[in-house]
Amino acid sequence: MNLTKSLAMQERAKRRIPGMTQLLSKRPDMFSSGVWPGYYSKAKGVEVWDLDGNRYIDMSIGGIGANILGYADPDVDEAVHAVIKNGTSSSLNCPEEVELADMLCEIHPWAEMVRFARSGGESMAMAVRIARAYTGKDKIAFCGYHGWHDWYLSANLGTENALGEHLLPGLSPVGVPKGLTGTALPFRYNHIDELEAIVRGNKDDLAAIVMEPIRSEKPQAAFLEGARALADASKAVLIIDEISAGFRMNSGGAHLLFNLTPDMAVFSKALGNGYPIAAIIGRSHIMESAQSSFISSTMWTERVGPTAALATIKKHQSFDVGSHLISIGQLAQEGWRRLATRNDLNIHIAGIAPASHFNFDYENAMSMKALFIQFMLERGFLASNLFYVMFAHQTQHVDSYLQAVDEVFSLIAEANKDGTVEKRLKGEPSISGFKRLA
Image 1 (cartoon, one colour):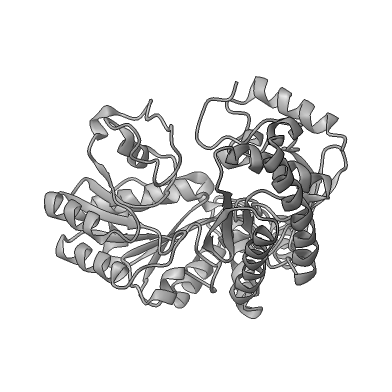
Image 2: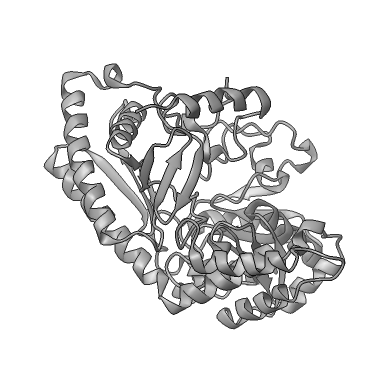
């Protein structure tokens, strides 16, 4: 493969952009530096073209879960193009945001009011601010990954690696005010005893319990109900982060599948099929607290995001996209499991079907991951050990992908047995945590 232009752009980016990209998950060293193309010239459906003109079928991160329908979906793009012609912003507000608020509350009958943002991290920060404003309390109990803002990274102040279980090891809280020490308190998913301990020790200071509805494992019996009960007992706001899980299993929040009624829920990623949009929905008496705190941004009033979200949700509902994503994801998971067994490889599979991953169970797992990526690129697939399903993925894509996986697993098993995994790498091993980019 010729990656001359792609690799040159990466070197150029290193000189101008700290960390090379705006999103850690898209950094080439998370895959394999020197091999992962890093930049694209075109994307359509499930196909991606890099700067050198190489064409790939994307069986990897799907825009980090943002492109739920597929790249450049014609229905969403048509709606966006129409409003662009009539102006994307003005001195007045766009009516689409009101329509979107109505739609989200209809999908989630427990919710009564909505605020909008344009990215997941800022929307989580907004939700936490509203909860603190409503309760007059400061501390946040959380599990899972919820963004880069100070309230969240403060969990690593005065500790070695509180966020290692939830995000990545090695995250330094440098730049986060030390005065936030002890305000973000982590507990692990499905460990209700850990949340109980936090509530017991901070009952009078707890503003919110923040959690995802589902992570890499399903909720155990009474876990979600227990979290709801603890929020009530401590008069804390229960905030459900649907940024990753939302619209993957159904047309709305995954919490609906578990009969969980939160006080607030946050959406982004899949909500606009790649167009920037985020939503914070909640009970009116809590959401009204946004007016007692200053929460405001010019770009939250632009028209493209709400328009894209309306078109995305309508198509999602019409085609029962959630069921399709689950079906395709299950085919991939079953294929990984079957082919690993056939090729005598030890892997661990986790995650919900529409957004799952596998890990090699070996000491040199990061080198094996990089070799997998390298061999799959050579066969025309953008593929890592993660697979975010898009509606544009069809069974034939999975079939051709798994045929390539079979070949690649065989080669990796062979390299592992003769000790040549590292020697066969054309790029660098994948990194497993956060580190500065040289």
